Image 1 (cartoon, rainbow, N blue to C red):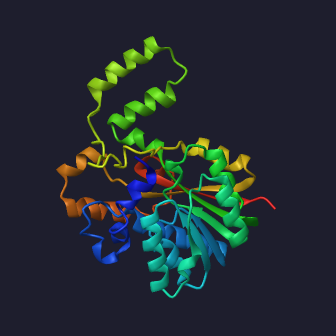
Image 2 (image 1 turned 90 degrees about the vertical axis):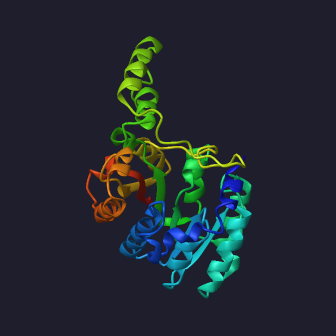
Image 3 (image 1 turned 45 degrees about the vertical axis):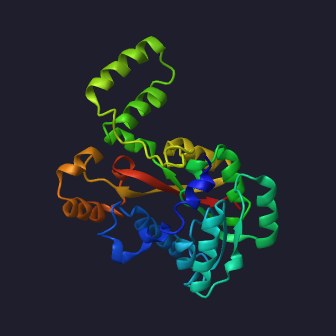
Length: 292
């Protein structure tokens, strides 16, 4: 199944994660609530007056930004998300037509969209690059919407977090990234040892009866250092990492801690802002400036 069908199935409830009244009641930790706070801060510090977003989802973030007077536009691959996004834009007094339905991996469609929308001070992609096959082409697509000296905001799933999870993700990171050039004979010894030390049955694979659960579609982690090199090679500088979705203990211990206490500790760590985020956070943002 496709990325589009996955998000079609999430469209009606996607905005719940941005509702401050559900901050403590959402079953799943609403990390994107704090991601939006981070993005708003970065835009304000940059002094952005216009933002284009690749992969708007239901446009809860983009419409929130647009409601402050910033010119906004964007696209999404999911037809159901686009419908909800256009309605959310209109509900905030913005133009629903500012949201286009297209695949950000379609270079021709993206070029047509760029001709329609023009250049922007800032371009962002939140939760999108995990689902694309070609990082270089995707960053180039983001770049096409930016004026010289403009701001790039690129979210990614953080592979370094696996060094704090002590589960299947840790095993995959060690074998597939750290020991990628080591012989299979040695890697097999390491794999057997990791099976004995780690909770390799966790986290559970997220599936749906329709076959388009999050872990059934393309949903990659990225090494922040490698992704930063992709961004630099595209003509960006002044790169900064920002972290969110903190974990005060490795995830499999969460069930041993009072749920309210655990979430309280998560929220207290958000915007912590140090190197610790590279290991405590399952997601991050690269901020960079397009060379003039």
